[in-house]
Length: 276
Image (cartoon, rainbow, N blue to C red; front, side):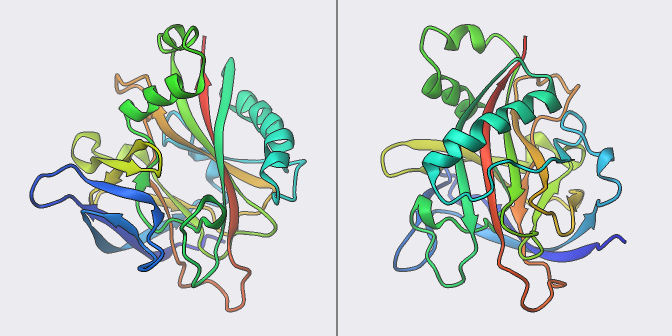
């Protein structure tokens, strides 16, 4: 049975003085929040449960795609083990779903919701309660240069390439703080998306903040299990209007979450995906 719900979503309002928006990747240890020069714009949003009709949503149409396949690696406690065991099986999964010819996973994030704990390091990542897209066009191209040999990057950039996240719950179903995805067909690419500098301790990246648009159509799959996954498109070099280019997304607090539900734990891999 569908479990449509209402969630409080944080969109963004760009700086009123016209300056370039920025925020830090790590939260301030004092305030518990990232340092930023823009403010959140909060809205109550209806989210449609697509369980039972998830086949209607495909990467090139909606910008995301659900599937079912259990991971062989199940502990997710050690980053080296994740890279050694989970990366190869995930590359195989992404290749089979997309038909891509070359896939390079460049990082992963494990999120474990811990109320009261400050998200101030990669080992303490919490669900993100902010509508966003992980990459812009500029940062996607920079990722190719950052993660691939300089002798290969130019030729790879002449091919179709994407950045795709592979997201799944770990340990137990994601009843608490599920993931919501915005159907690309409801996004106004030129008006809704705002490049935001993402400041790391040693470098700078760029993401898209998202401005509120009442036309946005939000989806989630209720009680996703560790045997289920979703592919989330963050970038596509095909930009002629023929395919979905990206998917805004956010974690959210579902008011229908049963009391005592296990706190959300999840992993996302980020992959450069190339086609011949």
